[in-house]
Image (cartoon, rainbow, N blue to C red):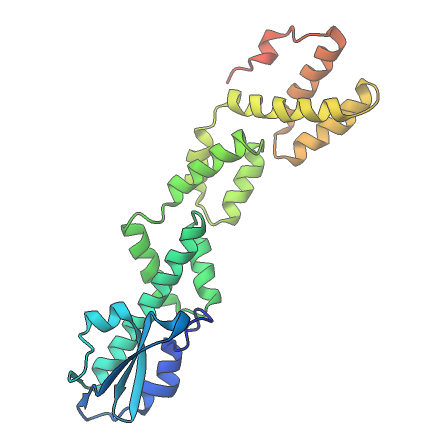
Length: 249
């Protein structure tokens, strides 16, 4: 496993350079504990005479890895695995600290860092149990933000959530909370802005506003309603069609 460049020692290095060299049938006593330096202060190098391995501080404390404590190789192999899991968990927390993520996004991130799939699955279960990852909540918040702030249509939002690994059921529930009138107001707002930017007559504005709204993920029916409303408003000089202005679900 290769997690972060700032970690001088990783679990993979423990396996390749340290733990594999330890004697199989011999009790090993810790002779020295050395804290990492600089950005590596969170890791500790545990010396067993001529042998050594590196673990995170949390792992060192959990397994009582202090001078004078003895272990056998099998116990140390289990500790190295625990350290790998803890490294992956800490990395996932840092990744989540930047902004909310989906299960798929976290899994892909850890896979890029060469974390074993079994460890990834365990980390995802832990994060979900701790309510740090919630795809259903993510989908609802994402859909609401995109429709109100980014002025994107439901088709666009659906595709985005699919790419993020959200299930069809969760996507359906999230989009179901967005009313047709809310999507209408969103489409009308961004459509009006585009309409007013287009130079030319009404036909020119229709030709440019229609595909613009379609590209933003609004349905053909929604787009036609918006364009027809804007066209009628410009011809009449006012928004007189209440049925269109307050489009009902």
